[in-house]
Image 1 (cartoon, rainbow, N blue to C red):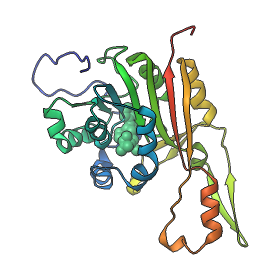
Image 2: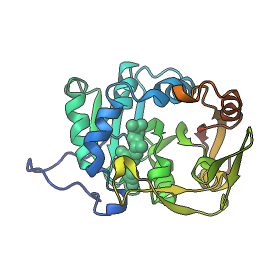
Image 3: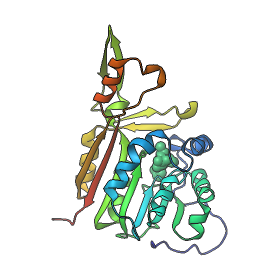
Length: 270
Ligand SMILES: C[S@@+](CC[C@H](N)C(=O)[O-])C[C@H]1O[C@@H](n2cnc3c(N)ncnc32)[C@H](O)[C@@H]1O
């Protein structure tokens, strides 16, 4: 299992770097998010994203895996079911409490440990200990991505794998336009790094962050991650009321909705 210092007193303290920044405050939507995701993830997780992440991760038996920005813990549970020892980390104390409750059996069996931390500062987590770090649909919700990448590079072993999924970056900055019978994408400000309101469940104040692909690649190479897998995933499904619109179906398939990346941590100078 992973190396975390033992807490000295048994009183419940506020976790280090707890979520004082309301712009990333997922506590307020935790109940709705938990209902949406459940034990298996929502339709997009199940159908498109998770199978690709699991394929890239490979055999998980007895591997030490960090599930960073784990939310209410469902993917940590999937990883543990495949034989991994999992450390689930999330900034939202409420989601972490839910994760502990949702998957209490795995926690009791010491298969999963959940902690509330800001991923930008994992001070209590020892270096070079994880075989893999997974960040499933979360980098775009994290403000301090450069700091987070530095922390991932610190806690992962040399040769360990970072696997992350995000909505494909163009999706934040594009609008679908219909002209006559044809659909087009209007893409604006793609190259800008931008904060965009998430509007999750109608809540104000939760932010997502648009970064062009180049931003992600630069952060990876800066920390000696070599990209080994790069999967652009198109959605094959549309809403039922859109099914008759053949042009729209073809248009949807043409552009990838999600991106899954695998990258291996190399030695300096390798
Ligand atoms: C879309 S949810 C994804 C959660 C989970 N990976 C899943 O697939 O259900 C994004 C998560 O990022 C977390 N998050 C945002 N900023 C964070 C940070 N700085 N450190 C750790 N977690 C963060 C949020 O609390 C939220 O749980």
